[in-house]
Length: 545
Image (tube, rainbow, N blue to C red):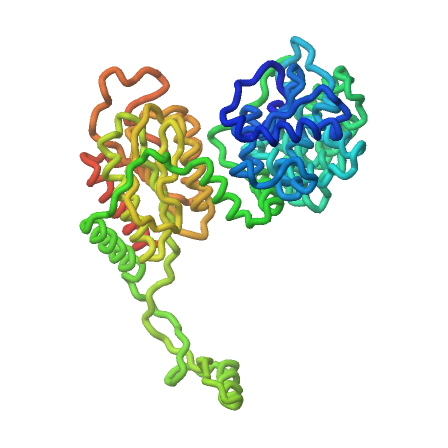
């Protein structure tokens, strides 16, 4: 996540690796940066992993701009950075340089010591559009490159939940750039509607007055910037003298309309659909580690996939019901429009495709498509289950392809890992590995919702969790489970009978085999029983739908 205060850092950063490979870029951009900034005391460092956690960063103490080379290209020989035409081939990378130059030229103030962190964060937020607007006013052609880089500097996590703080943050990062004349009102139409829905027109108008006043501040006017930051907090109902730190999003809430609007904007800016952008984002963040082992599926796994697909198909068509179907021949009720269409097709010398007759018959009932997300606990105490659940991920994916279902398998531990994304049919079985914590269970539930849309009732939805219940942040997990339950998504929790390892429990807020409200809880004796229970629940849900 690229937070505004990560674009302007004091102190010395760690030296990035592979800087020598990009030395030509660093030298060329160091010679070029005086043209962008009007300063002759600056250097530029281009290297993979430079700029810390941000794509770009300006270090005032070092008089240095750093740009992460991964946002330029995979290899430094993509073009010659000494040639003027190179910027057209790497517009995002060059836009990052221009953004850093804007801070170097116009962010000439430092946060006073003792300033509450929340005021410092808001001041940095306002500085983003202020510095870019000043750069555009001084060099009008730089707007082209700053537009390219906005999508790189924003992240869907900056709109994690629909609350006033995150709505204000999104407004300050994107809507303020409209008044800075970097992006247009048309670009941010959906974002403006989402922010207005959370804040209301009156509060958004007050925030706009603040950032427009910030745009008129001098480059060294730190007092006004901090004063404006305090007004910003007051508009959002926050007392910075009581709440020093920046508000954190509630881990028990799903992303809402703010995140959806920001994803729409980023997708359009990237030239892809929102679904494709979300898929690429999840792939970057939650792909399986390269060290996980792969193997070919066994004949037994192929047979299990076929058997499960047959069971799912039978569940969809188990009880034929009276219905109507079109027919090209009688008996039945004549459909006049279709009969006229058939005559016209015949007169035109075409093979008739219209079905003039409507017959009553026993037809399979219309069943909703099953969306099944399987979450697997990858903490150390669940090591005995990883082999069977890795195999189950392959089996469920291939059974879903034959049975008009959609499944995904997600592991959660120190990080959230999407083992099998929806609508993918792996050729090999990927073996999960356990780690030492379950800190990401809430994140895993949110990823499952992003992949399968578990909160919306157009499909038959089920979340199956295989875990001993010894989790971090149980209240957030309970809040998410309750939200899914109220939205009509069934939640199945499978507890192993194995006791925890001696000495494992260290946090009194955690409890082995914790039982969640609004979830159906089963105890299983072994991994095979867990897989069977998930399959039986899926079949039963389809049969009763």
